[in-house]
Image (cartoon, rainbow, N blue to C red; front, side, top):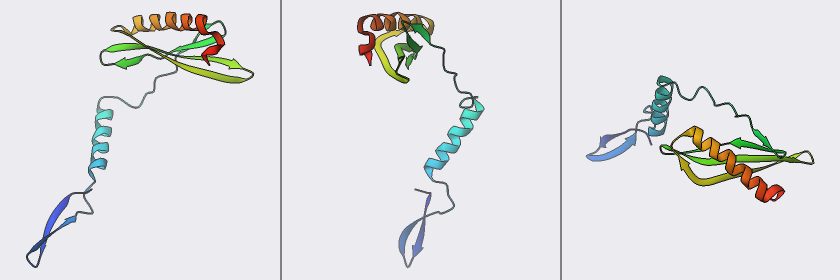
Amino acid sequence: MGAAYVKTYHQSPIVELDPLAPTPCVAILHCMSFLSKLFGGGSASKPEPSPEIYKDFRVFVALLKDGSQYRVGARIEKDFNGETKSHQMIRADSFASEDQAAEVTLIKAKQFIDQQGDRIF
């Protein structure tokens, strides 16, 4: 909804939208775009991390940011007859250090693979 102004016709007020005023959504998007450029965000995307190979499974560490903590998470993949199967593993464990969370993620993913094997998919 654009900016509104009031016109008076024959003593009764009528509210009309200003067709030239930007809508609030557009104004917010322009502001966010400006702030993103100002602080250097949005232009560079994170490259895909290289997987750790374990028993023909590919384990991609995919930590979840939870406030100031990092939650254990990984994507586990394996190829079957030319088709790639994928499973998203998320655990409740949280760590303040990103490196520690990544290390524990690999340990948990290997345990999960040892326990479940191909039944993961």
